Image (cartoon, rainbow, N blue to C red; front, side, top):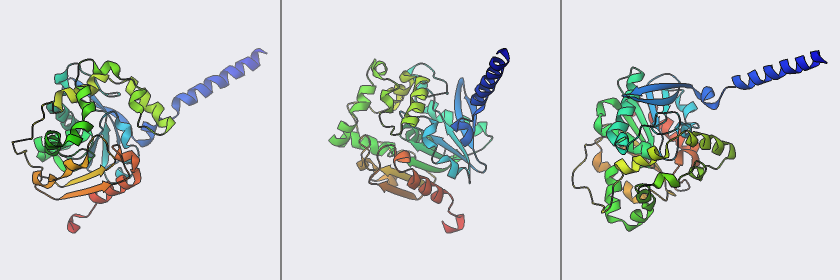
Length: 305
């Protein structure tokens, strides 16, 4: 009797140990790590070898949003998908000022330096796109190429907020996020409204439970235009590298009118791909198309450009 119990106990221990050693999705895609950006640790998952490619998620999201793009891109690049500050396993500093755009740009710089590189391809979606645009303007020497998903150039968005009633209406959520106490009305489950797969939703709920809702909304409080909206009067620093933009036209928050005239703020070529059946989270709504488009655009031989 005792032997049987002992055997069962032994098998239970072995089974439990096996569960503990089962690789997570992050382990299957790449390796975890942290980069130091001043006093803030930025969590990342990295895979592949080659030129550096940094992927920056938006709201409400985390590094996992790029899971369908990373394996293909890792065939040509060292891909680094980060958790932005405030999210998931990255540090969550307090205070609106901790989320001002120069801090967010500095996080990307810190990640590039962490890998002992001078520059990287920068890929960003939503707030990650805003950081990517800002990074390319602030440190063009560190920006190899720029890939932006569903985030118009910041000047285009500001122009639409000043002049387009439809965009003003579509941005009502952002004005709510800028109000005191807005974070208290958020829940981890509520922020996954857009996630379609149940298993994936569970992963997102867990990531948001590790995140700071105050930190998430500080992106809006520190950087999003406030009423009364004013059209931009100054000319932005032009983007010096080639740019690929992918925009799901069913995005109800960032309307396509803001894409107009993007070429005015670029020095090199612009490739714009619009997907009529994809929404805001275009990298998931049209994952194969987005992956193929980014990979093909980045791997065109120099002689063919």
